[in-house]
Amino acid sequence: MTYLKNITTLQVFPDKCTGCGRCMEVCPHAVFKLEDKKVTITDKDRCMECGACEKNCDFGAISVKAGVGCATAVINGMIRGTEPDCGCDGTSGACC
Image (cartoon, rainbow, N blue to C red; front, side, top):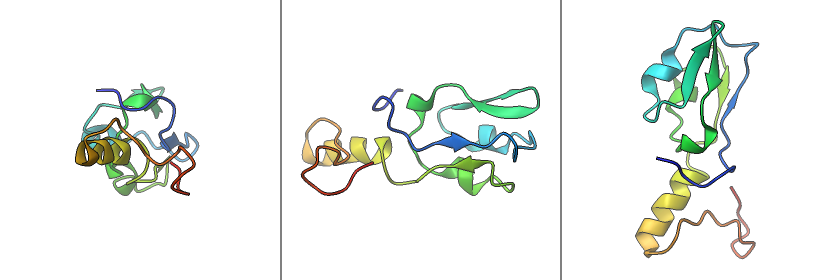
C-alpha cells in the first residue's frame, strides 16, 4: 500500500545503524532492507508513520514523527468520508 507521496517524516541515520534488523521485524509494510550491514529505506511512500521502527531502535538510527503525515491523513479521510487530508492546505494551521 502506498500512502500520500513525498510527505513521510521517516529518516534513517546510517552512522548510528548497527544492522540489527529490528526495524525490519516490526515494520508492518516492509519499508526497510539491509544493505552492506546498514538499514536503508526501500520505499518511503509505503511508510504509515506508526513509529514502531523508531521505538524499537535502541541506537537512535531512525526518526519518524508518529501520528502525522500519511497515517493521520488516511484516518482523517476515512472518518470524514473524504480524500486523505493531513491539514497541509493552509486552512488548519497544522501541516505534516
